[in-house]
Image (cartoon, rainbow, N blue to C red; front, side, top):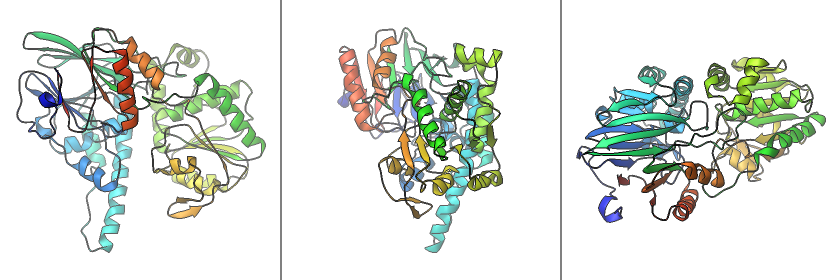
Length: 485
């Protein structure tokens, strides 16, 4: 039986290993959507699935990201599902603290992670400088960044890449296979085939699950023969707006703004959402549904990520693959400009004519988009269009909640621009889509662990799964919980 009295423990020594049974330690993204980190004990070996940055209150984030609840030097390998920072962002710190093993992922994940970790290192440096400046005013010593660009580069050198559907041995008794998760470029479900003490079983980690029917990516691939499942629940209690209406609504909102000679500001995540909205605008332009105005993607990371998208058509669905081969670059138009340089970005502030500006970050918490918001949020002819999730307390969430004024760079700004939000572009499956994903998992599910969702979403999806699988033991994992298999 799986019970709190038998295998739920909060205090333990990871050095106390047992050859049986397999154990999973939930060290992150438990009843929250940040800091994915799971330690596996298999046949006396320690492995990690994911090594993401925890993002929350500054002091808690610093403590959890700097200090691992295990010895990095004893980790044999890392298995990485995809390149989002909340899944891979603490790998440089892990390597800095002594991890020397392989980091297994898909080809596209490696390429995306290389630019995202470099960008994250810059953020760590800037963040440390900001905190150190405040500490200096109190007579306190400066703090070091969590890691440097050199650490990020070292971590990338430890990546070992494999394609989907290619089983590979990781350690004694463990073979891993990546299956397409349809979430972002290169995202994977992680299939673990395990042999220990004379028994064999299959453990599936969903990674982050895509919605299916994506304009760019393939649908999540069904996995067969699964005995144990670890599944995300980001939108485990929520339904998205139907995707079929998304392009029409984007076209209408953008057209109405441009007709009023306004500007459209789109805060967008650099990986996934930026490429999605660029492709949508391209299709609307080809269909004659948008006037020909300048479109700018103003984010070095977005530019780099889009170039990587073009390098990995093996991740595309048939429609966009055929468009790429037979027609043109789906992420490029004559009126589309990608901007890396700060000077060019600053010139956008001088624009008088209608334009569309896509800029990171998607939650408006950092990056160049804050400058564009500061310059445009006070004008009623403009549109601020959010196309992704905004976590609580972020600037994006404040704007969406109707706060007025909002603070940008510490100063109050009146919100006069039109504000709209579309969740149709979300890369995460909603409640129905997650249920369909789990329903497509074939096998005799004995235990299901729900992770990667705010508590209300995770608990709700746990109840959904109990209804779907009354014979399976369903848990909603808690921080530092241990599950035996």
